[in-house]
Length: 293
Image (cartoon, rainbow, N blue to C red; front, top):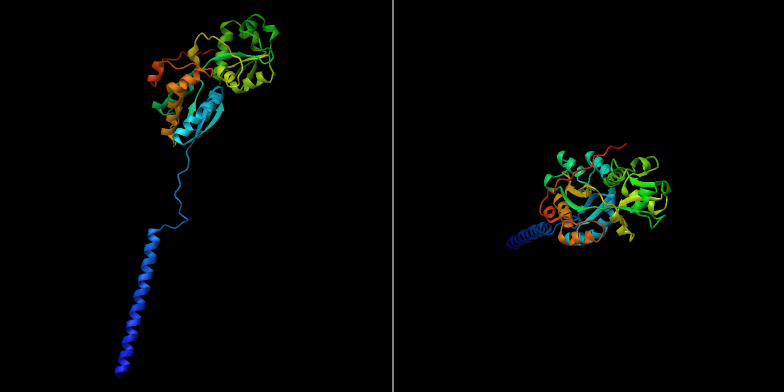
């Protein structure tokens, strides 16, 4: 009887011990899982990529000056170029850009008024220069254009309706009474980038392009004096729907820094005045409103 009781007691102790060990093991496993998330869950921080629309004249310059900004802020900048007027229409129709670097003031101001650009981010970043360029006739001057129009009938300009540099070229031709003489034989490009390629490949006699394009390709500039130089005062702004608005504005401000303005003056552009750099608002830009006919 005593032997039987002893065996029963021993069995009960073993059963309790086994239950305790099993319960402890299960609890430890559960705690371990809570302490160590599953390896399938990975927390990663993706590198921000800014999609920036830029006027064709500024593309090569922008690409040359961007690496320092990308390194400083650990971001990537993707430049998409075109005529300012065309980009303006794209943004009006919802193009997913983060910022817009225009070749004029007019389009950014319109986009600000329609609330497509954040008001406080619209500001000037450089002042462009118009140049005459001829790959066919390297020694061509503005006097040749003015005095011998019949010798150079195929002159190229960017579309004055969409490209500020094309509008500036038309203004200069009109000012010197040459618009009617060249009007019928003009080769009109969709943007100043296309015009530059037409002239460089000698498809035309000469063309009006950006000084910045010529400097970027180590070509000689023939500056065209404009009656109103500020018509090429170039503005930028951050899109209202940008998910990277803060970083996009940093990019605009980067181009407005003293060091970058100095570099721009060496790359075919004119530096902004101190008053323009000190404020988001630059002096009023008297826009050329010549009719497109």
